[in-house]
Image 1 (spheres, one colour):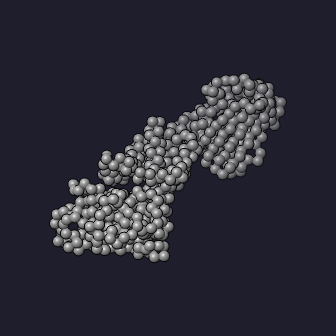
Image 2: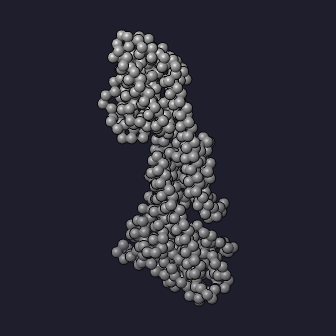
Image 3: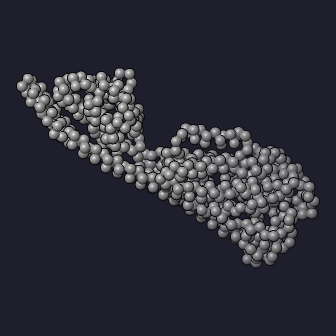
Length: 584
């Protein structure tokens, strides 16, 4: 956790100087901000170690942020700073200390110039300091030439560790301007992620409640929450002990978006085997934490693994030609690229890769994701329009089949015959035929109709076909959900084709419909008997689809529930079953 300050901007230019690893050079004629990264380090306590003439050649050179499991106690850090050029008459040279654990005292050429908290030789004596401290050097102390900066610190409170700590040398006004620029950049990022949060929520609530949009909204919100921590710290300057607790919270905040970004890609691009990917996304960071190798070699392996996983998912989507995947890949590279460059720098410092140049490119990520979402929505709308056109064409064909001369002729001939033998039955046939045409005419153009109306249409058709064949067809559909809706003529089409292909000319039949609703999931199960089922089941899939009228059924389902339905069918025992699953 921590500020983008001194990390995002071009804040430090290492100039040619002494080759000693604990020695840095600062030009008084420049406006640079110089980070002191390498120090001589020693455990213990001796006031003589603050002096500029103390011999520390046998002290190991370390990067404090790479000190794993720093033991509780008193420790010393020493670095040599060579000042070159002429001191500006309009500003004062300053030392800025941030996130040094516990309490510390800073000495410049043996003179104490800063104190943060109270350094103690035990827990009772130590008083932890604040996150940030600034020391201004007098003009005589900042004279050109070699100087020694020594830091005496103690960390008895919960063995506080170096995490993101830094010390910088700069002119006071340069530091203030850089900090202001950094805060402005963070506010800009914060605004982008807050706006993106509302965009994601709006898409989720108004776009069919697609889960990918919700994951994107939560991801943006957590990043925005993380970005608020540093500006508040700059304003309040927390106690370092509380701040490290806050850092742990921030680490969790950053971990969750890393998982959510991968989940967003899984659902956004409909990548298969989601359960496997989710398990892996949870397992890899857990293994890294349990093995205690998260910050091995100065690399955050947990964040690196999640970043690489995101990149892999998007590359998979590009290979599968998913709509919007290419622009998402560009955005993902700009997001994880600077971070991965930083990791390579930590592993191979001789490469000297400067990820700070690429870091502003991460601003491209959010627009790229929104463009990817818009392309997917456009593709879904195109498919929906195609489904509607297909549904309209099939609906027209279905209506034609109801009014074709042979259908009307056969029905009227049956009515004519019944008028002689059974006028009452003929009257019922006329009424059933009239009701069937009225229901079809009233509902065929609608996306959804009440299930009760669909059942009434099916029973009218069964009565007509039963009368025409002089047999009895029944539909067992009791105890159905009263408020359920379904695309029109779906069950009617399945029953009509069931009559045609499952029964002989003088064979009665029975259809059975069961509907189960569990939250937003609805399952329709339609079954029927028939002597010709075995013969029918042996036909090929294409012939079955055409004979069952599945083209119309599938088009209607896709129109009303795009991508959220499934149709299964087959012979089970002595009955033919069709199961329609819908996720509303």
